[in-house]
Amino acid sequence: MVAQSQPAISGPGLAVPRHVAIIMDGNGRWAVRHNKPRSVGHKRGAEAVREAIEGALNSGVEYLTLYAFSSENWNRPQDEVSDLMGLLKLYLSREVKTMHKQGVRLQVIGRKEMLSSDIREMISRAETLTAENSRLTLVIALSYGSRDEIVEAAKKLVGKVLEGKISASDITEDVLADELMTSSLPDPDLIIRTSGEQRLSNFLMWQAAYSEFLFLDLLWPDFSKETFQDAVSEYQTRDRRYGARPQ
Ligand code: IPE
Ligand code: IPE
Ligand code: MG
Image 1 (cartoon, helix red, strand yellow):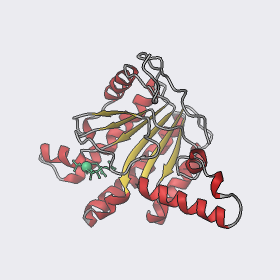
Image 2 (cartoon, helix red, strand yellow):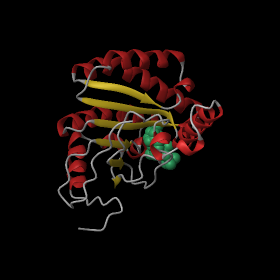
Image 3 (cartoon, protein in one colour):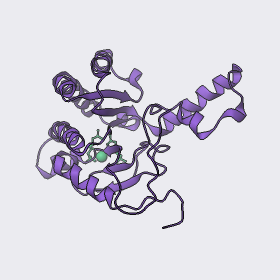
Image 4 (cartoon, helix red, strand yellow):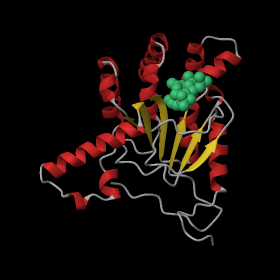
C-alpha cells in the first residue's frame, strides 16, 4: 500500500500530477487518415510512447501508466494481434537500455501469462534491470482489464478468508486495493485518452475514482512531449474536491 496523493482541495493551482495514465488510442484512424495500413499506425504509435516518457520526465511526474493492450484487444484479427506483439518485442529490445539510462523503472501490469514466453522473459529482464531506478516509474498495461483485475482480487480475498488468514469484516477499501495489480502505485491523478473517444474501455476503473480526465481529439501517433506538458498545465487548473464542499 502506498500513500495516496494528498487531496488538494484548495482550488486551482494544483501541483504536478504524481501519476498520469494514458489510454493510447487512435492508431488505426491515424493510418486510415494517412492512407497507410493499420500496422504503420501502430508503429507510429510505438514511437509516440517515447514522447510520452520524455514529457513525463520533463514534467517531474513520478508514475506514468500506459494502456498498450487490453484484455479485449485479443479479439482483434490475428494478424493485427501479431503485429502488436511484434512491435512490443521490438520496443522492449530497443528501448529498455535508453529507459534505464534515463532512470526509468519499468513495470508491467496485466495478465502476463497470456503473453508469449519470449515476451514474458524480456519483461522480466527489463523489470529486474530497472528495479532500482527512481526518476520515473513507467507502468505498461498489457493484456490488462480492470474487471478481470477486480475479480482476481476478490478471489484472492475469498481464499484468505477460507484459509482463516483474515475475516470478511477485515476487508476494507485499502485491503482490496492491496490485492490489485496496482498495489504499489498511487491512484492516477490524471487520465488522458487520445482519439476523441470518451470512455475508459476497462482501464483502471477502481483506481480512477477521483482521477481528473482529459479527452484529446488528436490521434495517438500525433502525441508529443508538448502535448504532455499541455495536459499537465490543464490538470493544474482543475479543482479537485473529493466530495468536500467548494472553498
Ligand atoms: C490503439 O489504437 C492501439 C490499441 C488499442 C492496441 P487503435 O488500434 O484502437 O486505433 P483506432 O481506435 O482503431 O483508431
Ligand atoms: C483501448 O482502446 C485500449 C487501448 C488503448 C490499449 P480500444 O480501441 O481497444 O477501445 P474501444 O474498443 O474503442 O473501447
Ligand atoms: Mg481504438
